[in-house]
Image (cartoon, rainbow, N blue to C red; front, side, top):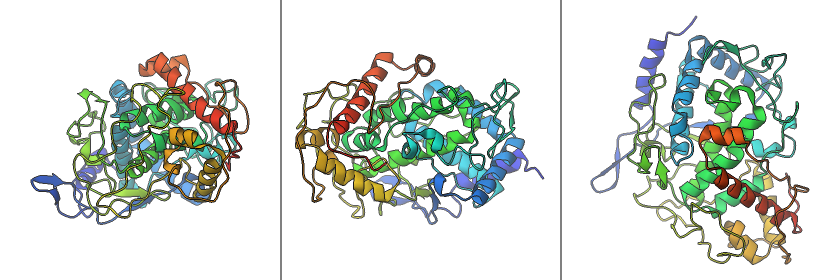
Length: 450
């Protein structure tokens, strides 16, 4: 039996009002009303840990949502808002709210439904080996003249936006997938980026685009949200943002440009009538565990014990968000990671990986392989990380061709850059910076555990 869209809307009103989810409002500062603390939390798990039965349950929800028109609605809304939610700092809060809305709607069909996250860095060397790209999960490559997806939880799906067509998938390397961004590159971003504007560019121009392009087909379009791969991919990017927020104690940092000019926490998150957010502001989604953002991640820190004070965050004297730090400039000027003030349970997350054991191997390996200048510049979180390791000096080389042991990341295609309205020179500059991180590690004694 189908659930009518009007009934789902009614259920969402209850969810948006936080019934059964959050306590009354609290006051973090005199005169400042803050989001209520969640009374119950759901956990987003690593998608690679799900059983075949769990994937089947997810597929049942997604297919019922498609039958009731929700999948098409999400594809249409993302497409219509595309230019406003990419290429600026609103990228993170919009997609956090967007995935949350999808999850809330899914829970009206199955109260146990939770969107898992896809840590695509774990198989960066060979994305084709990722267990998610199988007939039991997200499916494999498209088949036939139209590259239709014929297996996985959305196998043989027919979509209606922007026209009638099958769900398409076209891997980006002649039937296989180009290598993606290694965990160590994302780790460097998490540790060294002390402004959200800079972190957004690093993520949006790297892993975000690489996975979209690697999957291709509908994922390489403005209406990519019709592929559930979109949801698990952006849940992972949200996880990385949350890890970055914890690492820098910057839960309320929202800088650079938003969707309508200079970024402000009071900005309304862009929304479309097909998937309304009821006028939600950026601040309403900044801190997990508060308001209606009642979820966390299985590999990430828990929410802070108290709502962060306004104006808190990392210092702004990092390398300019408009320019990746150039070789030889400011190598010893990285500010230390901020320590928490009122939330004593905060711990920095020093790795982009969700694999807890490999995080330790990564951190100790990098600390033991790189000199102090390189650590200060690329992995400043390890400057105060104590581990018995022997360091060795090394000679930095100019970025050259890709090679072992860590794969060099792929470039975004000119078509992808144009579709998003990115500055091609900036994208190339950030790609060069990513390759430099890989080059520094490959020129040292570091051996990646991934």
